[in-house]
Length: 133
Image (tube, rainbow, N blue to C red; front, side, top):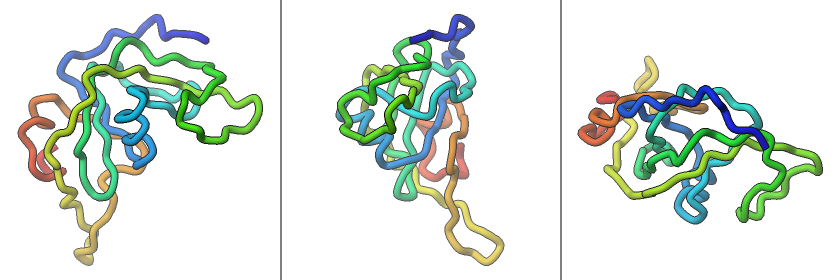
């Protein structure tokens, strides 16, 4: 397992990731797990977007850990030999919700993000809609 030696988190930056499973794992296990060696901007905070809103956030507890062989306790069946990146979390809490108000040119709702996005902690804590991020 390797840690990122260059991880110097920006205290005001929030990484926002998408996915119900990711949010549930944060709530239940205080970790965020994703594909191995995924690139992130060094951030102090993480928030979770799913079901058209952001409603959970946490403080990131140290640098992401790459090359982790175990999927934690989520029970998700990884293929033999899969390595993951794990981000440990502290102070996982409910926020908002911040509702997604992003629309396509025909007025239909579209996902705010499907991978990851960034904002500041001040915007996250004051926004009611994703357009405020």
